[in-house]
Length: 536
Image 1 (cartoon, rainbow, N blue to C red):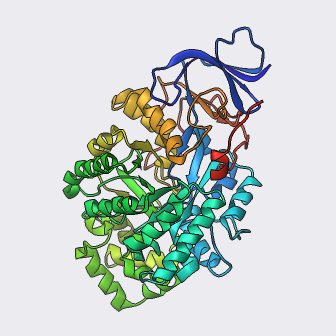
Image 2 (image 1 turned 120 degrees about the vertical axis):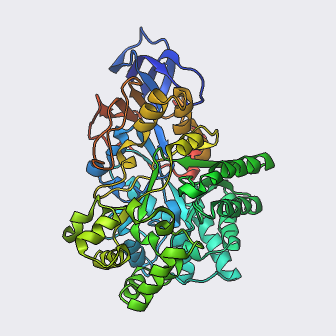
Image 3 (image 1 turned 90 degrees about the vertical axis):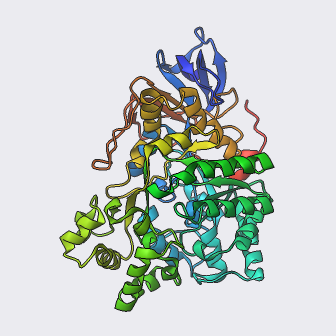
């Protein structure tokens, strides 16, 4: 007797093999039998005739680290078919912390990860245990965040680390890996990671490489100096032995479009050299991050409180305005994309809720500010920097070009709150609807490998990402003829259509396109991923 039998669907196993019309039998959270099961009994039958049956989607770039504990908010991920997520992104996440650094990170991350009150953890082990004790809709994996480790060793100091400090950071990364992380992350445009040099990155990556972890990185520049930034992290992988995964790969700004193909060539060259390199990409021509990322790096020394105090000084405001106009040495979104392409997506207070969904020219006009820069400074101060933004940066032709590359993996980079980037609600159905069915940029087999088998390989998950006997029953059943996203920049909270059923660890999380309330997610620690599995 099976718990579920999915009958008569087109089964895509996650390898890019052509579909097979067969049945899938599930018991005790595990795929027990793949084949003709017409004479077998089951508690629940899912008629998948005419539907696609796929492994659960694995999102390799998310910011659900806190709000995954709020199923009433977070369930939008399973409604897209996402059954596993990778937390700890961009080097800025919730563990490890100390009693001294915890308040800094709670303030720093409020706009990015949300607010669930006080954090009852310090170590990565304690954070993962907190998730294990919580009701979560999907599975969680974790990266050791560079910034959290750096802050434990040297605070938010805007300087390079000493040799001794780098050694301490490496040991902290190793400790996090032993506690269950699958790699280390950094975001080289965010404080305090922005103050690191290549030697520091090599040190932390050696800590991850020792345990076959990956290095997931938002490179130092994704526009004018993107090729140099990519060279940096490829050399870090070369010298440390770590596996390299580039976050939300793009080249921003129309004047930089020629760099896109060159960047992909650099990754291919690294692969040919023997460095394991992959990248993730969301299917949109706009990005999203914290609003204070528009400021030059020197503004972030000392943390958020110091930043807000500096913004009150007229002399500093004048200096920043000049840098907005001509400084190409950092990721200058204002210079690269323009104020008209920077939209406010979420603020922290009701007072400024009106700004959500408006670009900075519109915000400046409504505030009767002298220019958008002054409006930005005032808004940051009023909201204690708890603001997120969308930046329109590129062309769909480049998105498709990157999407077709064999090293590409689908990732959403979804951020909750306010009027979010539509990728939070639409990434996976958008790939399946717009780019597979409508534009035929990928075959369905190719797209599903990029959502399942490829990310499982990146994370070294031993029983996820494929439909195989003995594997965990994370499964999506969808209609390839109608699946699509409905989320837009104007109306970003529209749910997708066409995702019929989603099972997480053999429990039904989505039934006929609706969330069931099930919270069957597990924490997938690295040690568990590598453990030998015996299914009875």
